[in-house]
Length: 188
Image 1 (cartoon, helix red, strand yellow):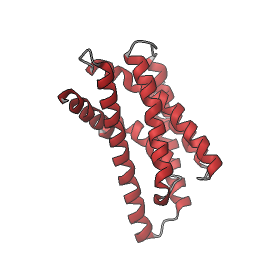
Image 2 (cartoon, rainbow, N blue to C red):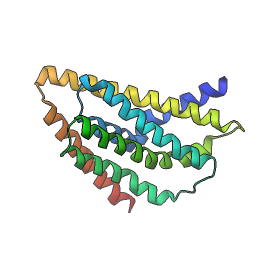
Image 3 (cartoon, one colour):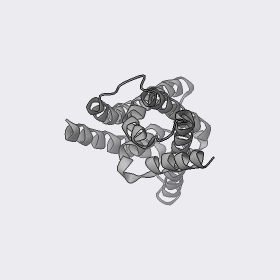
Image 4 (cartoon, rainbow, N blue to C red):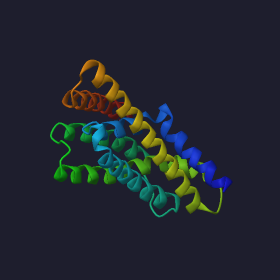
């Protein structure tokens, strides 16, 4: 069980590390169209992202797929850009939630490929499935903590400054798009 705890902590630390801000930015951009009352949809969204992430991380760790890390480093900010732009056209309705869930799952696969080199470098035992599971559970817990802090901040700002959802969505989508463009240019 010590191995489980070690990889759980590694997953949590990896997502909460500010060096991985592109992953955090994607999560925040994905969630900014929702309000705190949509917490169930947000939880499904985040879990879908983790599922996609887990699939490609497992395929990579088991050496089933090989990943061109340069391509992935370009695709990750592209996922942020696409999500930011789509936020301008989508609001959380039942039909559009399905599109966002598909985005989360598919883009989770891309982000999982980005973590694969890191994970392959730290994987140490013959029990790769336990390491994968605990690492991804740690990521999920970290993502949920980030989203809780995000919505807590939104709630505080909404109460103090009377920020409306549309402004919040536009601010984070614009910040996400601008950051993504800078990251793409830097990585080219």
